[in-house]
Structure formats: structure tokens, C-alpha cells
Length: 262
Length: 223
Image 1 (cartoon, helix red, strand yellow):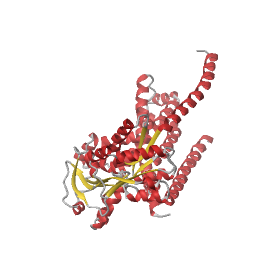
Image 2 (spheres, one colour):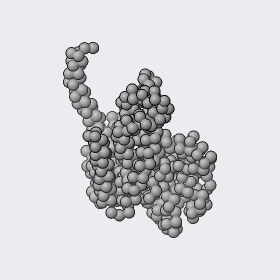
Image 3 (tube, each protein chain N blue to C red):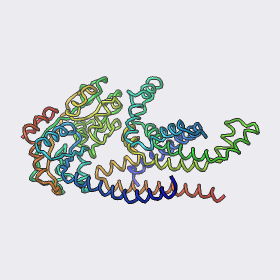
Image 4 (tube, rainbow over the protein chains, first blue to last red):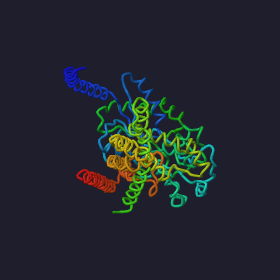
């Protein structure tokens, strides 16, 4: 290839590349317009994945995109203007904050599922009979969602504080970014115990054992609501209705969630 | 400045410095092993060794967790033979940062060694110096500036390591919570004041290091 040919090619590329980029942007923009973005708590990952598919079947042409993370992280993203349409949190406190800041449409808010906090251990490890056993030396690392940003961590902190154990075990705590990371640390045997929801433990039955159910003074309840900033208000409501429908509720129960006490 | 900011900063400096030293030794050794070889094999080896720079840090973290974890090949060996548990320790953060920063030193050292005049090395050999002495007294001193430039970039990369570190070292306050992880936690928990302070601290530390680097390297150039 001589110099003239190379220059010619470069000139042609210079014309084509911006055009291709523009087309790419246009394509992603149109794809986004039809998407319904649901920001949901990490513990809902499996159940919502299935409910989302069922929703798409029931509403042809719709496309649900999920954003799973710790509830506080999701709220933080929403506060910063993340383009979400529906918010499903793992505790009432986070949803209360979203409502107080007028991020969600309060009229659409519903509790759709309940869960229980459990203490898990690796299947190969020792099983504590009560929470106080965690003080033993054999429990070197205890995985817990970061109480500053993960609801499961807050519930665990509350439960440990109530029995006067919080200060005693603090140096052993490995703070995870969300409840699924805490689950993963126990499943891999890196932490000797951990606090997760019963539904999380059920997804890793081969690797973790539920040692005991941890009583929480407030029931673990999941609220869902549409975001005020959503340009797809009707679809957001349709999705919430679908989550409350008997078929989606059956799916949630299948994954170990219980129905909310009135 | 409060302890919530100082502890992560000191830990980050400690981790980044140790990681840079580790990566420096490994990087120089690998660059030396690659030497002046040419051809496909060299390209493949160099590309494989550069992978940590190209892979997403979370992928790196996953591999390290699988290798160094209690069920991992290296982790099991360390645990059974030496009684060492790496996961959730600051040493694990050092390994994560060192692996992530290693390619920067390798690339810089490789290029620097290639630039050393072959005739000078030959002259040393003809005077009866051993290969080790040729390397230590001729090649390394001549290539040192390039290697140092790579080491400074590596230090900066190690200071900023987040994804892989979080996966293998966790986020244990005061023990494995580095500056980047502490910033992430502060933002996610809504402690914007702490986050702002730490961001400023990290900015000043990083700019400081780069300025010192420019001065050190520049001075040598003039001379």
C-alpha cells in the first residue's frame, strides 16, 4: 500500500466513523425509550428476573431492564437522577426516605413481599446454636451487609444490638456492599458465618446452611413504588400491578418470600 | 482531619507502596526474561502478562478470589502448609494492587531495556563480567529512568485500585478499607462531607506524586 492509498483510506474512515457513532447513539436511544427500568434490592435478583420475563410475555412489546443493588445505593442513584421507573426496596426505611424527598409517587406505593433474616454458615462449618456463639474464636469473619447502606446489614445490627452482641463481634465483621456479596463470602467459606435473608440462603443451598432464624423487631418488608420522574408512568403502574398479581406472588413464594402481614 | 479519613489514607499508601515494590521486582524480572527476543512467542507472552491491565478489575478480583480463597489452588496450599489466610487481609489488597499495576512496570521496563545500547552490554561482557553483573551494572542503571516512570504509574494505579481489592480484601474498617473503598462507602451511606474530604485528600496525594515524578524524571533529563 502506498502513501496516497493510505491517506485516501484514512480520509474515508474519518467520514464513516462519526456516521457510525451517530447511528449507534440513535439506536441505543430508541432502545431505551421502550425499556422499563426497575431498580430493585439485590435480594430480589432471582425472583424479579423471572417476574420480569413473565411481565414481558403478558405485555408484548415491553422490555424490562433491572438494576439490582443494595437499596440505599439504588436510592442514591435515584437522588442523582438515574433514569429508573420503578423502585423496589428491601426495607420501609429506605422507601420512606425516597417518599420524603418526593422521588416516588406515594399513591403507587405497595408492600409486595416479606422476608426473614437468617444466620448462615458454610455447609462444611460448625453450626452456632444461638447468636451468642458468634463470640467464639472459631468465628473469625462474619459477613454482613454494610449497615450504613444495606438494609440486611441494618436488620442484623439491630438484632445483634438487642441481645447486646454488636460491640463484641464488631471486629469480626466483614462489611459487604450488598446482601448477595455477604452470601458469596459465606458460600466460598471465606467467612465462617453471615447474615442474609432466608431467600438468599435458599439460592445457595449446596454451599450454605441456615443455622438459625434471627428475630427482627420490625418485619422485613419490601415496598415498591413508581418514580415521579418516570416518563413511563402507565407502564410503571402496570408493572407494580403485575408484581401484586397472584401469578407473580406465587413466583415470590416459590423463591421463599412470604406475603406481607396486614 | 479525623480518623475516618486518616486511617484509609495511611492504609492506601502502605498498600500502594508495597504493591509497587512487589510489581517492580516481578516486572523487572519478566522484562529481563523477555529480553531482546522477537517474534510471536514474545508477543503472546507479553500480551498475557499485560492482561491484568486490560481485564475489568472485577474479573481480576474474581480470579484472585478463586485462586487465593480457602477453596482455591494457591489458597489451600498456603493454608495447609503455612497456615496463612490471605482473604480479608491487607496483604490480599497488596496482591490485588500489585497484579493490577504489574503490566505498567513490565511495559515500561521492557521498552527501557530495549533502548539500552547493545554495544555497551557487549563491551561489559568482553571485559569478563557475568550476565548478572552486566545487568546490574550496565543495563539496569541505563534503563532506570524508564523503569522508574513505570513504577510511578504503577503506584498511582495501585492507589486507585478498587474492584479487585474489594473482592479479595473486603471492606474491614481500619484493616482493609483503603481510601477508594472508604470513599465509595461514604458516598453510598450519604456521608458526603467525609466523601468530599477523602476525595480532596486523594486528589492532593495523587497530584503530589505525579509532580514529584515529573521533577525527579525531568532533573535527570537535563543532566
